Length: 276
Ligand SMILES: [Zn+2]
Image 1 (cartoon, rainbow, N blue to C red):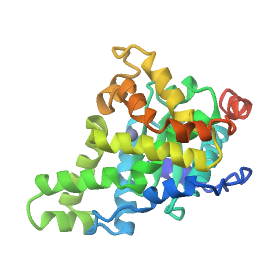
Image 2 (cartoon, rainbow, N blue to C red; image 1 turned 90 degrees about the vertical axis):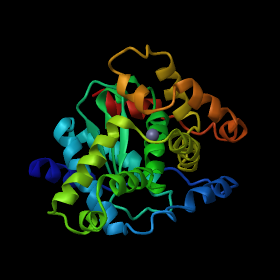
Image 3 (cartoon, rainbow, N blue to C red; image 1 turned 30 degrees about the vertical axis):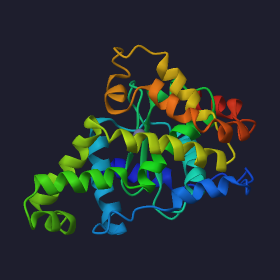
Image 4 (cartoon, helix red, strand yellow; image 1 turned 60 degrees about the vertical axis):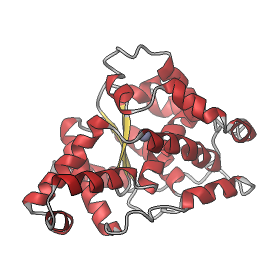
């Protein structure tokens, strides 16, 4: 685990791409929605949010290690950090990791750690698709979806003062319970409204970062074409609304999506970085 933590820090400390020019037109108005975050989570400060995330991330990495390919990890970090730089929390310790798992999935951990599986990456066709998925996960962090769910669940699981101890004392038994609950959440999933919000704001962030806005819808179409009984998508389908429903919800954004549909997909760069 220590080794993995070290590898993460190493892999994640590379600079972002700066080759897109940021569109400064009316998409900024939409992004204002993204800026209005976190007000409901008042009792968990940012350092605690980051610490809780680190503990949850370590447990998740215990279940599936990172793909031992520094070039691939660097590439995914470049894309992810470029996207995160477009948001109102650019200074979080953003880290992106490709997990060595054949299943199709991606998830966000509080404080800015985001994982995508090798299985999902292998089904993608462009950097715009990767950006769409990473931007969806980035929104979960921005809006503190998991943090709020952990906090809510912990209040029920931990009596009275125990929540305070869980948040403050990293060595306490209460803290251990909080992290176990937080980790288990990834097999249960978030509220449907959180997922649809992540789709909605995710396409805005991807468009703002200069990508074809149809990256995420394109991945959802790939998922829609798969058999829900396929073990590779079972967990993803259990923890997310059905792809058809997610695509239906994005339909309302079609004028916005169309306005940014001509931005780059970066098919070749994706292929060169991922298929090596
Ligand atoms: Zn999600």
